[in-house]
Image (cartoon, rainbow, N blue to C red):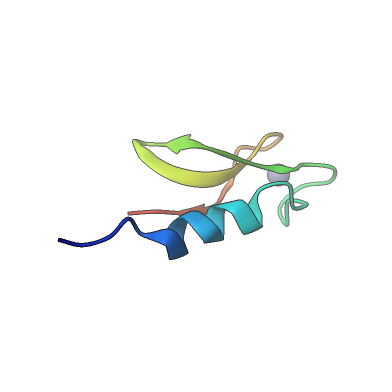
Length: 52
Ligand SMILES: [Zn+2]
């Protein structure tokens, strides 16, 4: 059996709280985006990373 994908989780944790690259003052938040976990800007809602 495969283990939980720690690297994907780690990526989201790393991205969470970082400044958004696409707008001024936005911060990345962990949330679901189109049914997938992603790090999404809380201001402009641009996904910085998605887990497919
Ligand atoms: Zn943004």
